[in-house]
Length: 445
Length: 106
Image (cartoon, rainbow over the protein chains, first blue to last red):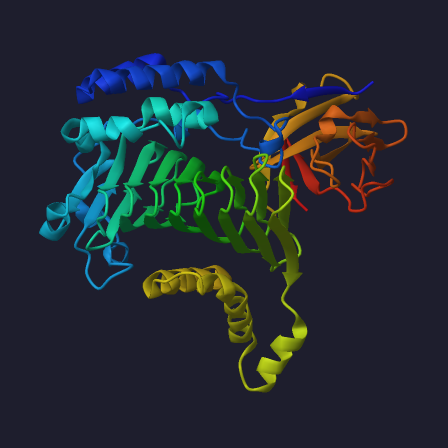
């Protein structure tokens, strides 16, 4: 009779303790409401088991090889410097100049600039620790109250207890933010990074926020355990762009959720290119009639990367619209998983929900999974989903080569063509250029 | 060139019926012996990603059966033997140096 023995020599959970939570709050002299919020998050964290291959949402993602001793290490950091950030990552992505720019290196603010025009409008664009001290009541109203809460999962609870940096964007009622807001998160050290992002547009407000996540090469492992909360008020519009290109020693576990009010509009653009392993939950909640959420996801995995992107479109009100398109490529021995669900509550009629995952396999050993789902409890709706998989066809390559185009260029052109449908949804030329450059770099590597 | 990584020691096999579950990066891998020769197979059913280590391993018939839907695979080459699996399971090359067992993707 076979005897199965599981060998594991590494800690199986991040090496944080309740004392870390207490110490963090004390060092920041945080208000009592936040101290209590962190404690409750930690309590939830302790009650939840680590996700495993036995859990449906995690059964395609084995992360048991992580050395949490390394990956959840907390460094006592020397003063970080803006000069550490590569110049190209400080270039503006959605406008000609970066006038509202917040830059973190290893969780420390190294640059903060905000134009007077934004301040005069009453827009808050600030690192979260400062916002807690200076706009406590406003932050308390929204932080961990409606979007990502500790109950969402083990890593959400961990972030709730131990987030140590982040940013807060708040646009008041009827205000259209004068300039887009750009945040750069750059890590030079290995170990734990737990940021919290909170963006709120009040009724009839309008804003654009762009976030760049990048890290330098390191020899040791890192864990990025992030939470993003996007609260789009009635009749307001938020365009949110998040581009991720972590080093190959990084494991990302993130919970990201947008809530959209009546007639609100969220245009959410994501790019996933880096990390060794990314497990991201990306959800939109359409809470009011007329709410519209559009999610455009770009990913390209190579070598032994694993991207597991779990999306949810929840129609919680009638006459709401969601449109999700994820397009990605994989090569070498990489693995990508997209699991998506469109859900409507009972009696939520006249909803229009769409989701599609389109995948391009560029090697014999790559594996890509697309698992769409619908859970619809109303009968007068329009909901559709699709998942497609393909490889580069020889006929178009041959055609281009017959026109004098070298094979490798022909392949790049076809791959660019594959991504074009997604890139057309991105209204910012420089973001498109960044993603196209990433595609070329991945193909050539 | 194959990237061999050490995953176990010889003395962790205390009988010929032992099956060790080890990690090669993000791959969970079953390591076992048949007639004194080591084999390594990805611990994942090719049908629905279920852990094969939860299934039934029959050394006498040289096969492993997934507990979820009953697919069977050849223990020596990972070939799918029965539906619902139609694709084989990934196998790893195994090398023993001194007391250390190393594996690499084939």
